[in-house]
Image 1 (cartoon, helix red, strand yellow):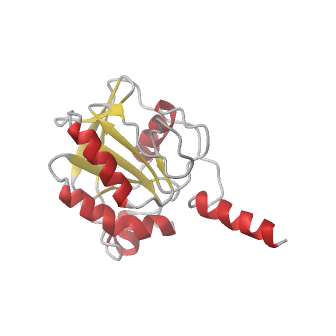
Image 2: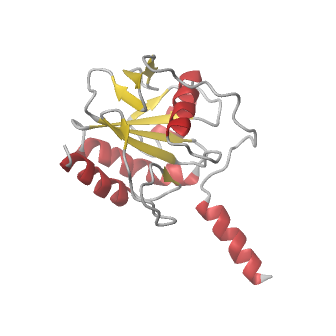
Image 3: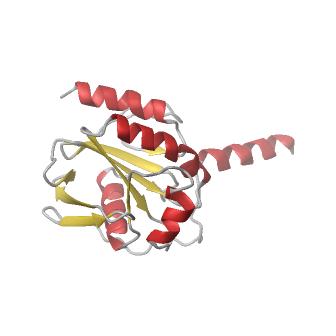
Length: 199
């Protein structure tokens, strides 16, 4: 019995945060090549992204690294890593765009600011909750052929419109194109250094 309890705890820990509402995501809304999508942050800043063959680029900064962080304000690992992600964004301000996408919950920008951004110093670009977030998340999942429902936090890294191979901290697989669960920004920073050196 004790063995089963340990296994159940390990499964919950490794799976990240589940969907708060226990609903499967609605029908896909993937982007087509050439589509542009403008996101507005919870603080009013705007960024435009463009769908390219096999990936996504930031309009006007096509060679920049983009980190899409799919998160939830209810997600404990998301809260824990937010201050470190802010530090990472500040360190790589001219080379990396970090974009938070709320995905599994229907909350407004005031709620995100008061319950996530302010208390956890998450002052990087967090997009207002909208169908655009779902379109980006659906496109990302299709692009990397991710076979499961997203667990939070979930991140991908792109450079020049191409998904980057990054460290798999859970299963030691090669050529993984996503981070899942709370992994620590030291791993992300090590991967970023390798990606930026390969320019």
